[in-house]
Image (cartoon, rainbow, N blue to C red; front, top):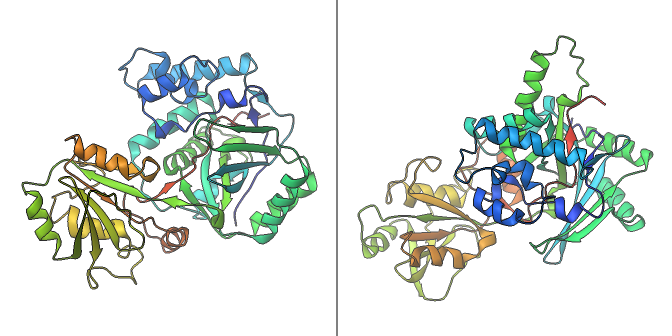
Length: 417
């Protein structure tokens, strides 16, 4: 059963929260982070992307970068830009975007829940990325950024959270440059906290929505610290890690699209001809076309948009993986026609989050950087949870959750306090 543990959060003062809070480390590159943090010494990017304070071009996995993260984190604490709460709390984090609000419970998840399969994943992780996040946690002895979890909606949790936010003012309330409104409450009510912990204990599984590498890294940190602690008890803070838990019916997955650098020796007409074996192909012209249902794709090629509708018999709707549009595209197009066998390692393909719009696909093809683009209909939360429940793994770059969590609203220290 799922653990939701209160903890002594480390947070910015109210007046600094909008300046400290930043986008997550993995949604922007070093140069974007450098620009975003320019003129703002309070930005958490100085801790989660510390290379921005070092020479441009430095290896982001060098020891100097991790040491800079530690130095900057200590500076934030010493200057009072981050302060620890006086006792253990659960917190509520609300994001409002395009008129829709999602309410997450912020608490610690258990390393053992990840190891024992209570926390389920739907993506594979890469060891190098796990190593990076593990080192970042170890040098700071803290989970600086939360992971993004979901769970099947529990009405009583919804009611408790809903009533609390109606009757209490948030400690933080600001709208960031991404036009997302971020609100954050401390749950002062100990009875409510105990009830939430009990309700989570009845939840059979939680799911990693976003943050597979951070979750895996947190588990590895816990195991390493257990091994190195001869007096290990099991209740130390390193046995837990920072997570925001959202009910599944409040979340939205948007499209995650593909662009390919070349046509594998074919002409545009060749590709269109070959596609007709697996798809009904319709040329739409210059107007951008966005897929509106499963098994419908759009393609931008040689200055024109096309609708590709997968033909019956080319996919298996009884197979949780085989029915996914990312699988259909890979099996009917990317592998056999464009010669891309390994999505994780090929340098001929790139992935574009739907937040950038289909105009970004068009731009990258029109610029000559890419030869063809494909837009997909997004998977559903029910599909994601079913795949995780059945022990399956989604193909790479299948899900894109929006809005992203804002980092820096609360941090979890692994120090005993």
